[in-house]
Amino acid sequence: GAGVSQSPSNKVTEKGKDVELRCDPISGHTALYWYRQSLGQGLEFLIYFQGNSAPDKSGLPSDRFSAERTGGSVSTLTIQRTQQEDSAVYLCASSLVGNSLNSPLHFGNGTRLTVT
Amino acid sequence: AQKITQTQPGMFVQEKEAVTLDCTYDTSDPSYGLFWYKQPSSGEMIFLIYQGSYDQQNATEGRYSLNFQKARKSANLVISASQLGDSAMYFCAMRVYNFNKFYFGSGTKLNVKP
Image 1: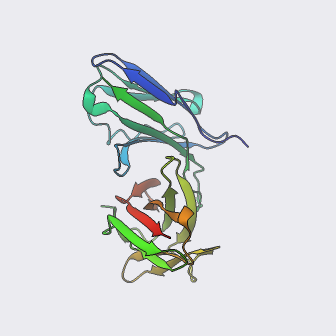
Image 2: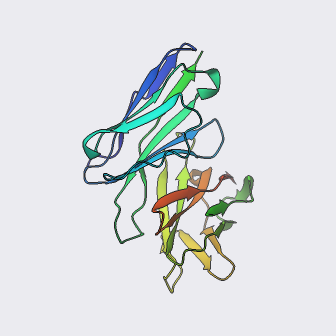
């Protein structure tokens, strides 16, 4: 079946512009995560959506970052007034959630954002 | 608080030898799952192996096995018979039942030498 789809795969933007990154999770996966990965670094948690619950926004680095998940499916991560330090790969992942802990995260291929 | 620690930023191993990548975790929740992911230079995250906190036996998947020591809170990944294609970043992750959220370690970069 189809995996997690992210678009665009690459985005180059000028400092100060707004960008939108899109994630289409695996059908039926109720949990959706956004992570950020700077070059050669680990995964930085940004935000987590689970069903209709309020999202866990505790990882968003500033109020320039926001995310939505419409209809429990597609998610959009928006970065306003981009800064050069926002340059990174933004990874989206989805997972089944329930009483079983063994459902792994399935990752998309990421969006590489470059702010010039 | 939940935390995953990987203390080896980088490791080298000779082709065909076994290698162990360390991972320790911290949680007070008795129900949790532990995962290992591989990230080649191409960037995709590949799920390798899972271990549940109540599992009695260590997980194995082909050349990957997980050395789970619950009392020490460690979940080390063992790769047997290393191959050049095993060169990648490896991330340990934990999912805690009451939080249902994944926590990642900082990763270990493995280089397999021919």
